Length: 491
Ligand SMILES: Cc1ncc(COP(=O)(O)O)c(C=O)c1O
Image (cartoon, rainbow, N blue to C red; front, side, top):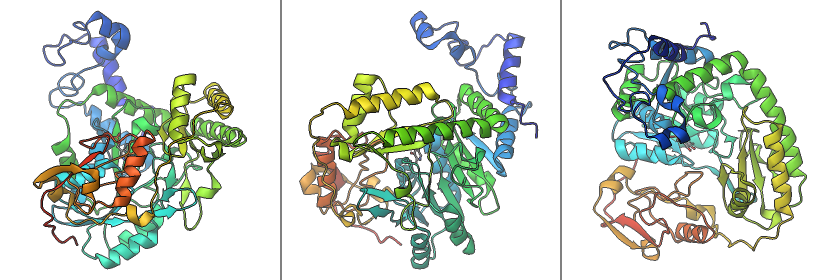
């Protein structure tokens, strides 16, 4: 296919050339009615290109196949059979993929290091999770993605499971052995869904971790806004093979989606695909080189360690996206939360992720030596700054953070509930999810039995400034639990 074409951008240019007058949404009429201050801050062009997708950008019958052609080009660029654009983030795409694989009451193997949108998918659908546990690294206090052996064992123990879902790369950039997991699934004729929200760029450079479609996944979900150059909320799900019905996948997305998709998002995704198809290798090679030299410079700073080879081993992560620079702050005597707050307050630098002993600085092809230098200089200044001793986060034995799933998330979410003090919630079944964000991996999932360990972890984490936005009480002084402990048997 002609990867230099860009159907959405071309249709937008044609729309502007024709000078249409619109008697249909959006009501701002391409910015004519927009408040001056809004226009001044956001810019007139944002509104000029904010159009109805069907009936304005394309005709009433979508006869120009604008979106379809853009999706076909995306699939062609990355070697998938089908690609579907979503303007509701990977949060929607991942739920759609789950609905395309399993029906209510059926079970799926899911890595427990899943994002909260997977839990939302379980709650909406009634799919039963069979959790596959990540591997806890006691030295780094970090969970590595679950191993292929763990998936093999889970399938042996739960042969009725209809498929598997893996998150890779993790928000830290660590990766699963997708090829081995895909082989385990396919030997049983079961599909593999990969939440590759952090991996939109992977197909475009060989030195990046293996992209899920090349590893044999059936569906993979990517956020174009994370490691690509789309607007926030732009996401694509890719499909290959015949284990998942493309119509079921598309109809699942249609059930969850908006009827007013934002054309700006489509245009940016289409344009990014064109950019990657034409220049991705060159742009990503430069980004990898810059990230590599930046890693070495930061690693040379006193008290800071850039995690690299220590993350990748047989009993650890399978691979690492080196554009994600994970910096351990433990030896500097400060928490990741402190480092992140200091960088923002004192140097106007924002990092993507922070936890009790790490920050992650995300590099993309949009960075340059100037932004890299700003980061290194700021971190050097940070290492010379005296910050108060951080409040410590209680990290119990990993076993205490591996909660027993007593009912499905759906049953617990819709059950009769009560709010109890966090201490009294120990031993009770959670009715809500409780998620430190970022990275967005729930510490408690609805239907899990709450342990003292997880309460200690969350309470001490919050004292140390961890943020838990989805809990009914974000301070986690109270937790919503199921009123009666009448569980149902999970598979
Ligand atoms: C692993 C993972 N999956 C899915 C999502 C959801 O992606 P989006 O923000 O595009 O909805 C995220 C977001 O952080 C994520 O980290």
